[in-house]
Length: 400
Image 1 (spheres, rainbow, N blue to C red):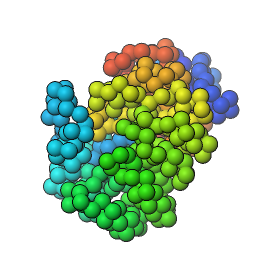
Image 2 (image 1 turned 180 degrees about the vertical axis):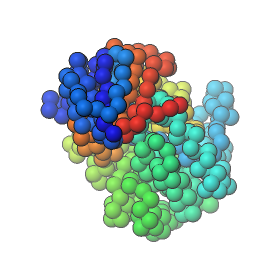
Image 3 (image 1 turned 90 degrees about the vertical axis):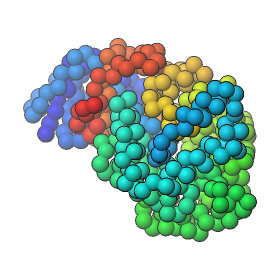
Image 4 (image 1 turned 30 degrees about the vertical axis):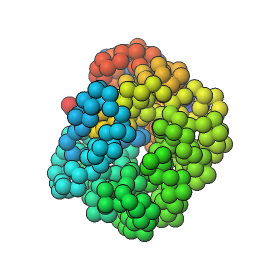
């Protein structure tokens, strides 16, 4: 089936040829199956036509850092933070990640799938067409495998494209609170080999942070993942400069994420080794903190910056990439084009999909967003306002 899209206001996308964002006007698109087959001033010989009615068309958003596999919610913790409790205080009293662990462990695979599906579909309604999704609320071999199988099933039954990441090193489970290294051994000796053998995760992630996994422990886990054929990424230097960014550079991670407390040395190490910097300003906002990642400095030093939501039940429930773009412009020092690139093209690069998605060009997947806007300046400007008209994923217009 060949579909012609005409009466387009403009197309804005990353340009491979010019190595920058470009705006195309007076053009039409031809979609052949799930891919873009032509971009030209006049398309002929199409089986079906779609009138864009003057819409702005951009690539689908790519959210490269999410935690959507959980049961219930933690709105009670939000209420505690409003009353003045900190994230660490809540975690030490049995809340935080550990409260989600209990719910996931008690849920069947079917229950986890059913509850996660609704959250997955909400991403699409905000214009996100691809996500990276992490496990990390099971923290046993059985429950991490269960979570990753749910991610695999969601990728099969949902229109959303989902890239799986193993995050067994999200926190230390209650049964290992007094023996952290033994849990690290469990991850390395049992979890990673079995998950790799079953091909359940493309990436391995570690929460490398003070009071969580040390640099030494993180290095062991990530090196084991590399030895088992996984690619790696890190939660890095969120609350303190723990040396996680430097570790990401040392091991060749594709991305280091959060980075609110990263040092200049950590930024420089990432830039030198080509580690992408994934900023999650929604988390800073949701936790009521003032220390946003310094995206401006990272870009000036030479890092490629990615934007993502960090969607999770405890520290960020935002699923809208335009809101994240707004926060990045207002608080992280990015200009609008940098935020735009961070929400699609660089997102694709950070999940190793930049040969398929993240741009509007011939041969790429037809993952397209239609907005009632004149330019990308309006994406962060209309904060929280839904001006998304249509979502196309792999050549199919979706209904919500």
